[in-house]
Image 1 (cartoon, rainbow, N blue to C red):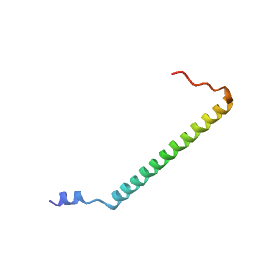
Image 2: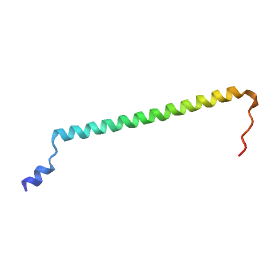
Image 3: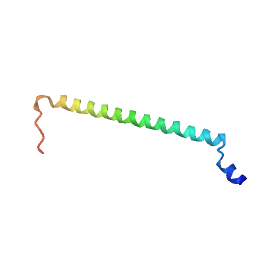
Image 4: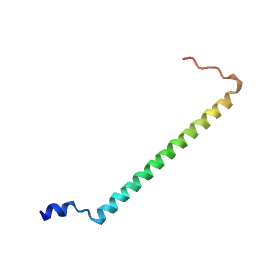
Length: 63
């Protein structure tokens, strides 16, 4: 019985690791969102640059 009770107790070291893991996962989520935003901005800037280079000679693409 004592082994079962002892096994269910979480040590402070384990709690710290769990908390650190949660913090790191949140940081990764924020960085992934920032990366997606930066990629979208880059793609928009490239599209704008290409359209400005094409000028008035832009023709619609055939589907």
